[in-house]
Length: 128
Image (cartoon, rainbow, N blue to C red; front, side, top):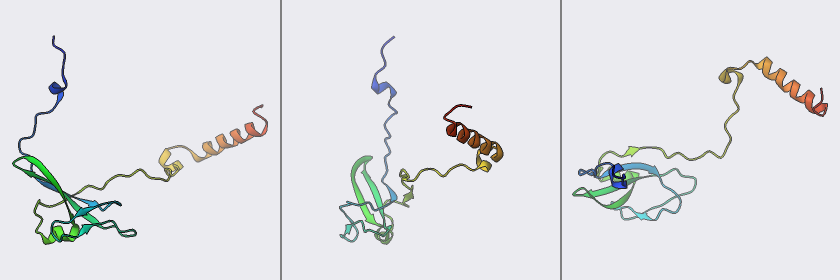
């Protein structure tokens, strides 16, 4: 039996790539120029401005990325279709909230008893 190669596991190439648009928050450090108004698509602190990012394909071949101000994309009559909004997930800096007895399915009294036993053991130096 012949050994498998990387090309065996790759999905077939999509021959019909089409330009598409997504709506995203403008991130710090953005240096793109809006093709509609010619102004810079820039991040502003304390604002949650959004941009439309478009992957542009010509004859099923990727050519470029265009970044529009959200309102400019509307004014340009959405040249690459309705933008898809998929919020980016960022890791939270805060810890998960503690489970309550209602969500964890445990009995509050048995939790209190366990806490009491742990405190008693710690106070006696681990001896009972």
